[in-house]
Figure 1 (tube, rainbow, N blue to C red):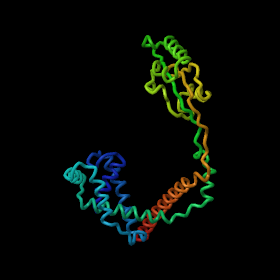
Figure 2: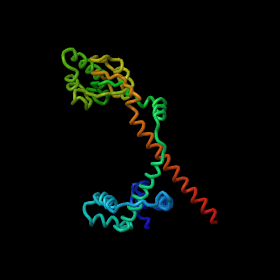
Figure 3: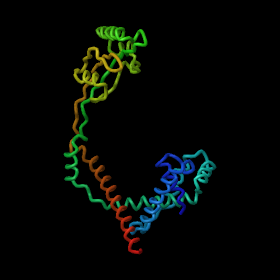
Figure 4: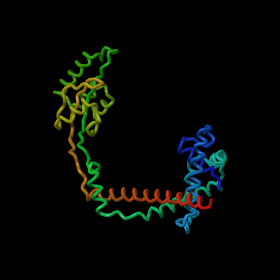
Length: 282
């Protein structure tokens, strides 16, 4: 079988290029990886687990069509194949072998041990932080930047402007004041920052926001950007997902992890056996 398709895959995965676009060092690296992949493929397809595996032509057709759809027309598709040392017959053969490989690895993964309730509970206890949604706050803010190059943004002027905006909050909503005064793009949306967790803002703003109660607005806060006013619109308390709620997600994660481990161990043993066989022959 032509190695052109595997070379093309490796070149794109390693360098984001076609084989024709590689420099000499990249070509050597691609050739090295391609040789290993082809040897692994040969071992997998020759393993007992591959016996009886049959890929329907319809599946190959579907894979071909998936590649063909990336091109404007058949002529462009054929031209790209030719530039990469391929034709439709070679490509179909490569795709067929790839599909057989995938089927064999699925078989191997299916031998992995079942996930027990004890496995799930242990994972839940050991990784409890994964099942906690931290406290969030919905916030708005108003920004007056400090920039000594502009008269209206010199520090003293900017401070006076933010104090003027703060005074306007006594008679107007925060959203309206933000639209009028704020120099942040969020001004178009009334200063809305959305829902925030801790450590998503500058430390000065973060500290101010998480000290506020719902409906409260901070005093003037200075950050590296300039002066701010920040308002807490809503508080969403920390939520912990129960073991029962988390079980389906944990089971899926552990099943995938064990399947991958099983595949890796099987492939490593396959190549180790091949090396032993070669040494015995020698």
